Length: 105
Ligand SMILES: [Zn+2]
Ligand SMILES: [Zn+2]
Image (cartoon, rainbow, N blue to C red; front, side, top):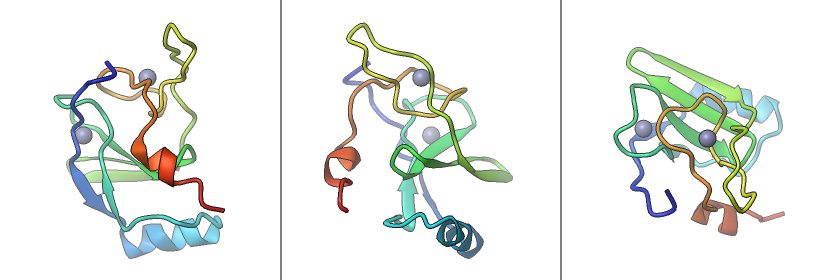
């Protein structure tokens, strides 16, 4: 699945969602997010809001901002699936580029 094509559906955080994140002291969020599930998944998209911490899940007519526990799946090499538990589509074991540049302190 390392070369899987991603959905990349885009979504923007609403003002209310941004204020929730501010109140939770979540920083460095991008107002425009992209679904990181495997292309061709079901109705429920999921985009990382703060790497490894918060996710926006959305589907027609509904959206949920949540602090999600990770998927419990591990690759043969012991790499954790990087999308939230209960996600649609295949597991994703590769590190995202966002992780590599997202380590700002
Ligand atoms: Zn999607
Ligand atoms: Zn998974």
